[in-house]
Length: 116
Length: 118
Image 1 (tube, rainbow over the protein chains, first blue to last red):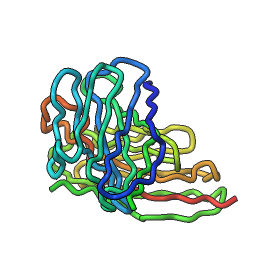
Image 2 (cartoon, each protein chain N blue to C red):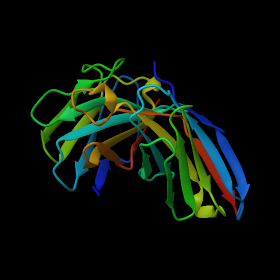
Image 3 (tube, helix red, strand yellow):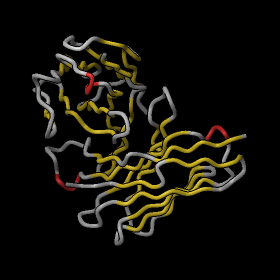
Image 4 (cartoon, one colour):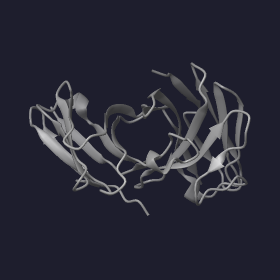
C-alpha cells in the first residue's frame, strides 16, 4: 500500500486569494491524481499529474484555475487560484496501487477548504 | 454522461443490525466497480474491486455482490458496529476508455452515509 500525506489538512481562505495544496507519497509513483468533493456532490477527478509532463485536466477544469506541479515521483501540488465560495470543497490526491489490469486507488486524508 | 447512483443517501441503524445499500451504474462497457469506506477526517479506504458478473467479495463483516448485466452492486454489513460509521462510496471504473493509460478513471457516486448507534 501507499501512504499519502497532504498539507494543509484544512484552511479558511478569502475569496480572490490562492491556496497551494501539497501531496507527498512514501513511494515513487508514475501518476498522481487530484480530486475534489464539493458539499453534497460526488468525488470528482480534476486532473492527472504525470512526472515530467503537463497535467491532463478533466472536462470542466482548466490549468489557469487549478495549476498542478509534479517535480518528482513522490510529490505534487495543486493550486486553487482566485478562489470563490464555490471552491469550498475537500481536495484529495491519490495514487494507483496494484497490477494491470485492475488497480486500487489510495487516497490522502484530504484538504478541507472553506472560502469566505 | 456516466451516472453512478447510490441509495440510500443516509442510513441510521442500531448496533448489531445488518444493513445493505445499493450502487447503480451503466451496464454497458463494464470494466470494474470499486467500493470505498470514508471516515470523517481520514483517507478513503479501498474495500473491494469487483470485476466479474456474479462476483461476491467479503472482508470481515462486510461483503459485496455485483450484477453487471443489470448494472448494480450491493454492499452488506452484518452486525453493524459503531466503528462502521462512515460514508460508503462506489466508483465505476471507466478504464475501458483507455484514457491515455490512466487508471484514475473512477466515476464516484455521492455515497451512503451510515451511522451506527451503540
